Length: 361
Ligand code: 5GP
Ligand code: MN
Image 1 (cartoon, rainbow, N blue to C red):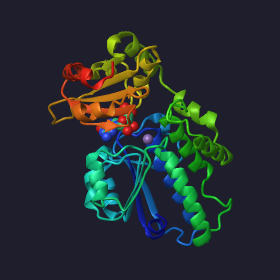
Image 2 (image 1 turned 120 degrees about the vertical axis):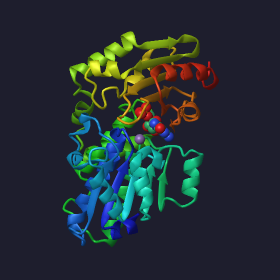
Image 3 (image 1 turned 180 degrees about the vertical axis):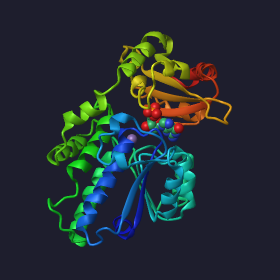
């Protein structure tokens, strides 16, 4: 990674569709770090670095340093295609399957330059094969990590030590883990662990948090920016979903929430408004599985709407196999996603037909 970073001139950072805090945090941490390192290094001004996300990210990440410079592929695909074609290094964070970055994946594959993977998802068979075939120049895959941000932090720290010794960067504060970098990393740690309520039992994580606080992270300000800036519509949509749209299957310890495109429109849905909704039924005693389906209206020229499905579970009750085998998705054992092209009704029928096979009673 050190050599690759040292020689790259046009770095493109990519992260997954429907970017979450870890996707935004890990990609922007790298972006800010490279920008902080470069002016003080020998190659000042010689490097361009861009973050490209496949589609829009929620407004509650707008405050992140560099968020205003992120390219959204869906909105500016021509400019993004040029950047991707001209790249001489890709840094890919918080995903391991090129399919998770949609059309960006095909463009990345078309460019044979080095690609570094930084991720914490389990690799499924296809993804393992891709890695074995040497698709990635370097793989930093740590499913035990809380987040991609945790891995980015460790890589940057290591890189810092190498840089300090070998690149002779003279840095004002002796570090490029600036407050901006640290704030991005903290955001991913916070969001991927549900504000440290799951995936967060390793003590090492709190050593990292301590270091980030020393680097200037204002954790309460970040919490407030991400979790306390919702619209009134969003909170009412949550109320409607829980009150009117939640079905419980008590024998299976399972809850299902569905929201149609019409219902979402009624509540002025904005990207990110249903973030976290799938976790709420797990607050019910005796509910260990939760599934949420959200309809996205068919795009012009396509016949079917897309049903985006989120799966959550607690403890030793994996949902990723179900998401993978039935809904063309995958993910972590306790947090997965998938999709179906068709109606909500079709998705619910498929869900009801298959859950007895995949759920522990
Ligand atoms: P969410 O429900 O928040 O959209 O997704 C939860 C987790 O499931 C994500 O962190 C991601 O790891 C995984 N995931 C979501 N959708 C997909 C998908 O289509 N394929 C795979 N492999 N993983 C997914
Ligand atoms: Mn993540």
